Image (cartoon, rainbow, N blue to C red):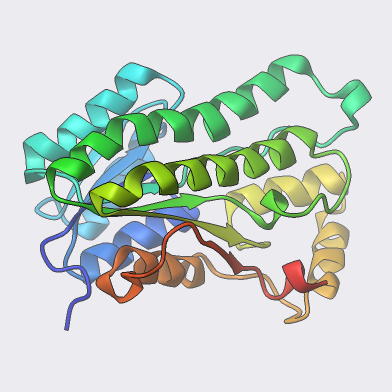
Length: 256
């Protein structure tokens, strides 16, 4: 039995990784999905894989108010409304000390990871309210509750901020039957992790990977599909009492 029958979901960062896995899973569970991202080719491929009757792509920059308004309006125009918002888009930034961190890179990370989530909430909440409620899930990170590692000041700060936005939205949205939660992935098999491995161990990314694997109690990375399973639970009616929560999906990193 489908767990999201007739639901309409908007997913940012949907062209690859966790966003794509979530979109594919939601569609299999009965939802129609709006796929948002900056890579037009990746979105087109994702739409073809899911099926054009179930998915529509929107090329957008989540740091721009007009793009957020447009992606929400696309959900309304194409499918009739919005029931689920997955604020998943994010970037990793640089790996270097605060002293040497490029200011323009810091600003870019904050624009995508924090301003992007804020704007997504700003435009999605009214649409969810018009449907009588719904579910919002923000993809944060174990970096949202830990300061693990060195040289990731912008990323760590942005992921902490996302949890703050989630908690504020929880209080504002509860009277409207809108649940808001955050998922905190640990190391996951995505493009972002490949980039982080290389930046932490230039020329020898396997060394950084081995260190991360050895630090995880489960001794492995997660798969995007495993994170998508957590998203599905929080988006579904099975999580009807869950709001304001921080859900780690990190192989035990947050316990260490």
